[in-house]
Amino acid sequence: MKRGKKYLEAAKAIDRAVQYDTEEAISLVKKAAVAKFDETIEAHIRTGCDGRHAEQQIRGAVVLPHGTGRSVRVLVFAKGEKVDEAMAAGADHVGGEELIPKIQNDGWLDFDVVVATPDMMGVVGRLGRVLGPKGLMPNPKAGTVTMDVTKAVNDIKAGKIEYRLDKTNIIHVPIGKASFTEEQLADNFQTLMDAIIKARPSAVKGQYLRSVTLTPTMGPGVKINTAKLV
Image (cartoon, rainbow, N blue to C red; front, top):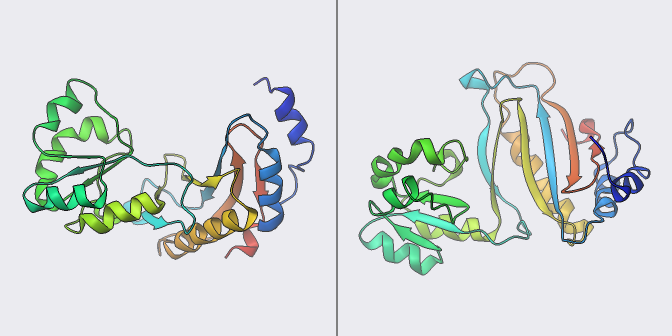
């Protein structure tokens, strides 16, 4: 893969063979974000889990203290008084059965997170083939299937992120923007890691955190010393 001049210049300051302390890694990754837009800083966490086994799956959510730096569009599936509650909480879209053809047939996907009350999951389940592959299906573990739609919407708007293993047993999540201070990024990263360490499945043997890398959207990755995280 051919890299641009800015990427190569930023990469010179990072030793790929070194695992850095968190503070130094965050400082380096901020300096490596040299694109003309405000790059997202992401954490990529390779685990020792085998996601093919249900008892080694990891899925959950955590509210980052300083948010993610981006506005999140929330769709709530609800009925009755919960519709008004979701609207009052600041949901971007609220509806029920009438949204099914709009999403299924018209390809409407102007939302980033889907919340549903438990009594609406029968309706939402029909959208599994559309929402599932995009990681948008509501899930109780992520707090997106709930009767407390006010808390769900407020948490998401405040910077709640969902984490889960992908097919290669890696967790990919944003921890903020390059414009954040080092302290804000460090707080967000520590909050995320505390949640992931706590979520360690008891069935996992051996090393749990295989590698942790921070990367800006367009720049090189910086490896973190995992021994100091556990």
